[in-house]
Length: 415
Image (cartoon, rainbow, N blue to C red):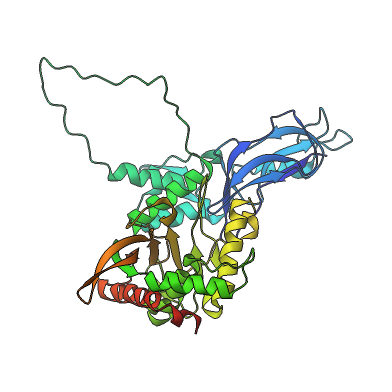
């Protein structure tokens, strides 16, 4: 009897996943444990392994299809076997019943919705319905691109983007003028946006369109921090888990500042602002295919060395395709860095529903006047983006000033 390849649940908030790429074709033989299809969720991308050995007899979800968790993507069976067929050649009644009710709404999310003068059945993912409600998009005007015409979150985001575009002005009457259309360049390549890139695209668009983002900047004199860090590394035995990097000190400085300025340690969801007493810190990690944000849970309860250990472990797991073992949700504030690329100040984009994200630039040596004397100092640029709906400019500036003060007196971070 054919075995289903099921869309798995890869996170607490996951309701559906997207097919990124089939690694096997219909009719190909597969071994148990062999990767057959690549999928992605809001957070991660991973390859699914064959649950049994056999032939990939059917593919029911194509590339870029959005599939609810628990639903089949394809089937593995014996050569010549059909989906739903029992070993004795009879049909599986369960499969027949599922096929018979496939067109009916599975949940109240897919109930019949009136569309202008006629009624049509809308199949809407819960995530798409929530987004449509937030940005005030009429679902009845959207054509779904998911399985059976299901409206996905990406469809809603695309509809909002079209709505935001200015209407074309009437074509002017211009004589003796021709309009040239550039031909496709022979060296150019086109690729449909999918997988992790598609998820990041949708999330960044939603972040900028649904929040009131403002960025403040500050320069930290990191001269004493660098000296302190070097001494700490000399005193602390260096190993693969703890190296006490500048990022570790920045993380600790942010955690301490969040405990003092709790308004920055909040989530803005719907019409509710939830402020946390504990800090769950997100650390952005860049991958070849995109960006992920592992979360250090209860970071406020951990020492500098423990934070260093978790940051290093999370980075290694993220870059070695162990994303499924990482906690990628539940953060209350995020740190992102472009320092290794020589970037100074920049504008980080919020990771909703968080109300704050700190961007870290590269440290540079610059001359600074101190008490009338020109001295060489190490300067660290910081960029704080915050949601002005939840936090005003003065509290955000006070938080950034505390982070700066913490880093300029690094001994406080180990007390």
